[in-house]
View 1 (cartoon, rainbow, N blue to C red):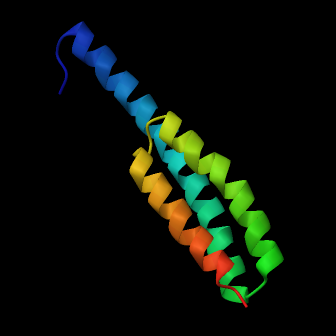
View 2: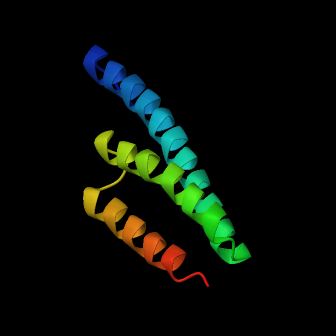
Amino acid sequence: MANTPQSKKRAKQSEKRFLVNKARRSRIRTYLRKVEEAIASGDKDAATAALRAAQPELMRGVTKGVFHKNTASRKMSRLTARVKAIG
C-alpha cells in the first residue's frame, strides 16, 4: 500500500485514470460491436453508417492513449474490408 503522500496521490490518480480509460474502452467496443452486428445482418448501408460512426471514436481512443495507433488502424482496415465484401 502507498505510504508517502506522493504515492497516495499517484494511487488515487491512477485509479481515476483507470476508470476513465475503462469507460472509453467500453464505449469504443460498443461502437465496434454495432459494426459487427450490421455486418452479420448483411445490411451494407447500416454497416457503412456504423463504421463511419466507429472510426472517430476509435481514433479518439488512440489520441487519449487507450489504444495503440496500429491496433486502431488494423481494426479499421479489417472492418472496412468486411463491410466492402457485403453482397
